[in-house]
Length: 196
Image (cartoon, rainbow, N blue to C red; front, side, top):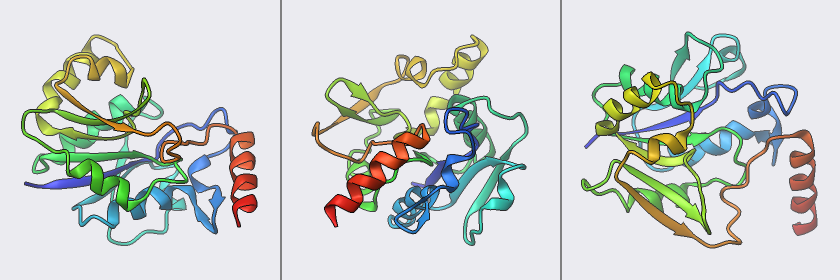
């Protein structure tokens, strides 16, 4: 069974004002948190899905870059493109690039839930689902294609059509905190300083 890791790092960061995945948190760019979480689980290949404009800002070895030809179409399109370009991969572990508390232990817990009865393994915190910290099976691709042909753009639209295993996480779990605005980043940095 081939399992790849994917960092989605081609977003517009319109609310942040500049590409947020390169903002520094705990002395390294945010996207590195997602990258290290994947690398800590022997996934292959490790893929950074981005665009030609952003690619020069990544200084990575031992990763494969998947360059989006149409910019800023959202995670649904990014997942479709990656699945189409890596036909030998059975499962794709997909992470956003703006999650400062993501780690290898979280990925390990998710990988333990993989089961051929499902097409997606998705975390759930209370009633909130986390489709950008999830695992997707290759068999989801035809459904993904169909969703996009219907001009739907939401990951939730996809999950409604898949057989999904939802993995429950505690309400106080910080794993799914993500950065949307500069204020979000400042608040998280303050919390970190208070914990030191």
